[in-house]
Length: 359
Image (cartoon, rainbow, N blue to C red; front, side, top):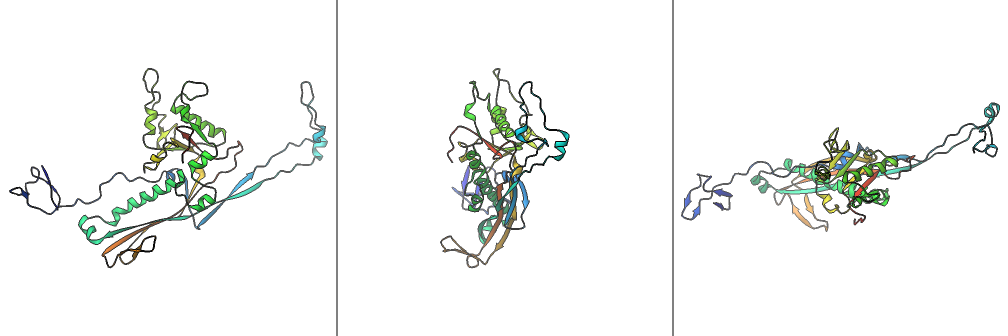
């Protein structure tokens, strides 16, 4: 039997220190267990897979090749003098003397620039002194949750374009999923079946996705998806109900993976609203550039007034005996995509559940 009191939850049969007085229970002080019990704190999938570097300024500029050069054989003849190459014809490109005197041809190269700009993310956490003392919760225990919240916000922007800073969009980055769809880089998992041109199963669709990227000149180096997707692959069975794939399919040199490439699971919950848009994102992840202008930094104050967005005072920390933890983070991101000789235009592709993109 459990009895709820103003001090805590007690059980008669398990706590002999509680003394019954008629139908009442004597209220004893409740002990608060130290620490916060919660789920495993997760980090950013984008930071795990992308190319991360420090920024010494707010803006970073990358120079990319816009057009590629050509090279030429020295022929020693004008183009109009070149013989045909039909059956029985004799191919000639001029005499040695003509080659020695031939003019070498020129080629051209052009370059373009792409930018990424650091934007700030911030949050305040007020904590009344009396509540902190009674609950045994402190700011050091809160900090990892703020890191997780910022990681979630960063993944939402980079992977799905949610609340993406306007400067990032102005620099041509709208989020990996929207940009991949806009570039036509997707494979439709609804085409799994036995008909002509269809995929044999889910793993075949992933292989087709990676093959398409390779044909465009990209090297798929990793996948990002939602928790549980890997087990959809493990559950695949043949006609005799035997597993089709072994551990080689779902492992990588660094741990969990697909086809030997890293598999990162987004455990923050942001993928839940995008399962109708994407089952998996594949990419050459070194093209995702993430610049850290300022690490996540924390500051605590007991004397700063807190205002809402309308400018109204909501907390006077000194007068109301409270402290405020402030967390700030400055980060930039963009997909820096060099020109590919095989014609690829975007280094990410999406396995979609169907042909409809609802975002």
